[in-house]
Every structure is written in structure tokens, then in C-alpha cells.
Amino acid sequence: MMKYTLMALAIKESSLGKYIINSKSEDYGLFQANIKTVLKRQKVKDNSYNRSIYAQKLINDVGFATANAIIELVYWRKVHKNNWSRIWSSYNTGWNYNSKRGVDYATKVFDIIKKLKFEYKL
Image (cartoon, rainbow, N blue to C red; front, side, top):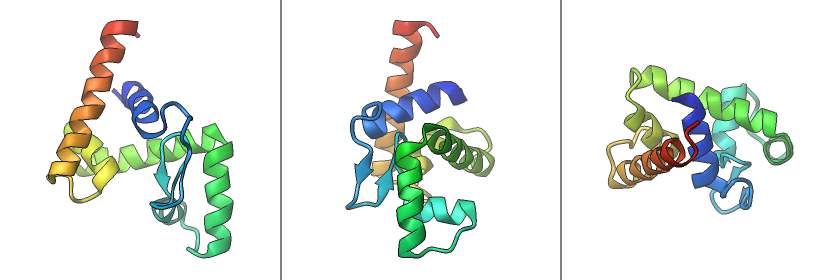
């Protein structure tokens, strides 16, 4: 499920790299990782310099962006005990996974995964 989730998130979050910067929400890269969350997960001090460095890293280094997305998904997978709907929701809304926004997001990710499985038979 992880490979399908990563593909679906790349499609949902950035249209496969078409939109890799959201300066309003401070989300960057193929998977639109929130910079505050990235710094926290990387155990790096949150300051303007580090935000700039890590934002560029998320934008320019697909390997780093992918590794970061996996770290985030593994965290929520442990929290939600493999409940993928909640994992997808939390990827977008954090602890507000039961919110309408979170449920809608999870539904959209699942719809993308169904299309990937059906159309491309990966």
C-alpha cells in the first residue's frame, strides 16, 4: 500500500511535480510537505535559514522529499495501526483526521489509488 500511497500523494499534492511550492501554507516538494513538520521530524531548529534550506531540499531533491513522505506516513501508520484511511487523512490534517476535510482528502487519495490499480495494473 505504501507505493500506491506515495504515487497517489504525488498526484494529489503536486500534480506529479507541477506545483511544488505553496508559500501560503509553507508546503514544498513533490509531496507538499509542511516545512514546520519536516524540521520537527528532522530534529532541526525552526528558523528562517533552516526553513529556506529544507524547502529547497524538498523542491530539488526527490529522494529527500520521498524519504520525508515515507517518514510521515510511517508515523501516522503507527498511530493509526495500519488504518490507511486515517493515515491518508492525517497526512493532510494531522490529528484532525476525523474532520470533513480529512475524510474528503482520504477519499480522494483512495480514488486515485483505485485508478492506479485498475488502469495501470502496477
